[in-house]
Image 1 (spheres, helix red, strand yellow):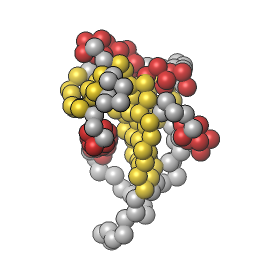
Image 2 (tube, helix red, strand yellow):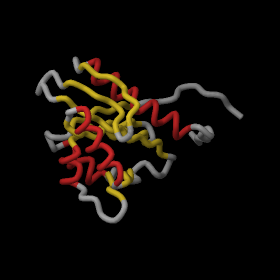
Image 3 (cartoon, helix red, strand yellow):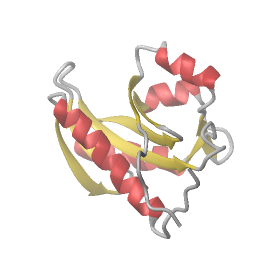
Length: 158
């Protein structure tokens, strides 16, 4: 299906991504809150480790044919998240949400792990979405992953 995104789709994607991560954490017993702070989107208490997590959420919606495109994270995001986590006494994490074709991928990992996998070079760090990297993520116990498959059954026609 050809998709024509709205003029506010990027903003809506960001809000959806934050709320999806917040919902999933809450559903699994994390005490969490959406926060409005530079570099920080969610604060969550992990009931399994007792760790207080400061999470920056990055979400992207991919067009047909670009599902395996990487997600770029500007390097200044790491400093912003670190500073916010110092202020709130929490451990920095990233949540990455990619709407790619008929799947929505969600990854949660520590900032330390993200930079271990993809050291920032130049101005950005790139979270890769090719099958080769997806296989690596699925086999890494330090990356929390959940995913949705979806299908539009009926929609408006032009």
